[in-house]
Length: 406
Image (cartoon, rainbow, N blue to C red; front, side):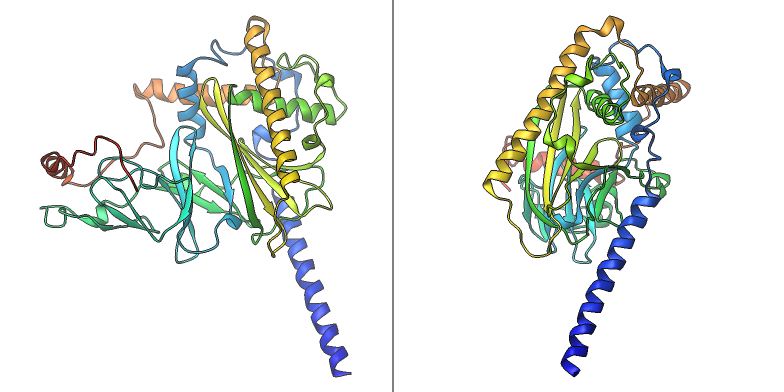
């Protein structure tokens, strides 16, 4: 009888825990209904306007988008499940910013600009790894998992040099209740305290846990402007809602191939990230886009399993998903080529395009009023001994010639 009671207790506890987790995830989804303007399903004919010149190709406009949008928005870049032990890190580039995320001994994931405070060389050269001390190979400066400078050979006795003033440049990082990790390049305190974008749910996403297991990742360089992705996603939303609207970007949305990826439920996490899930499958995929230039975008995909025990991604599944991503990239590139051909008659009838234009225009007006470019992500060294350190560096002249090994 006692054994039966224990079994019942274990089952009850397990079911209760699952129910609590399910409720938590659904509450998170409910409170994250699409309030992010770029994820809005509202398609209004009143949003029609001519696109500015160079909308798809102008580098100056792209740099303005970088200052007005990517430097100030919360961008989902990964998930807590990618980090297991202190020192686990991975590096990539987001909108031209070289960064790396690392798990500290306190269990917190932090993000830093991947540049040494001394000579701006990368702190980590590897795409991913694990180390509780990261060192720049130029002069041996070393940093711990909180970004603090722990070692600076030959600089300790330099007058005015303070290690605490030479920590890595940290980037605001937040983790939501489902474990998704967001970064914000804006250096201001207001940005640090600003809310995360709310998730837009499309279909019926499966529950995602903070304990999801990281499996693998892909990266693809592609030839299209990042705004094509925004417009293309909206075209798909329109098609799925059985309301066809001519956007001028993809002339016939009915002709789009019915990729399996389009039959998966989605979570739109801000402007550049989408999570794909499928009922009955333990796997889910985080797909993010990094705008590299006016005509180039990098697609990154991370694969996870909701199961706590290791669930390897089969070779066939990995191949299939890679093919799906490649087809998606080809769609974007095809749409981009069409957009370039049809520029004279193109209109911003897509909700997201109009909002992007408005956001950039507002920022440009602020810059005009200030009489200079406003760079929210700009970092400035505050070390009073920086010039002396630079002179010492020149005197040392280690002769690395820019080729470093670390």
